[in-house]
Length: 65
Image 1 (cartoon, rainbow, N blue to C red):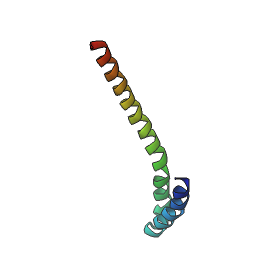
Image 2: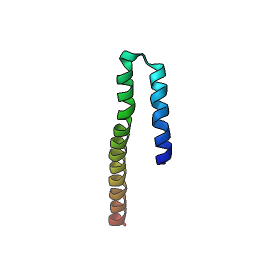
Image 3: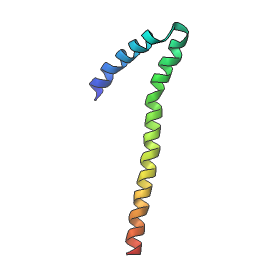
Image 4: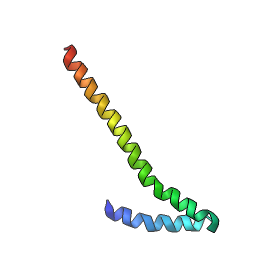
């Protein structure tokens, strides 16, 4: 996994540099780099809500039976 990420970042930076003009390049690279933190935050929030839902479902099913 780390090898793919290490290979993808220079490639993505090069593609972003090719597609955006100089004035917009920093914003585009910043948006690309923030994707890591946004994705991690969303996975943490969704994972916690799924875990809480499953635990409450299991607790309710054991109490009602």
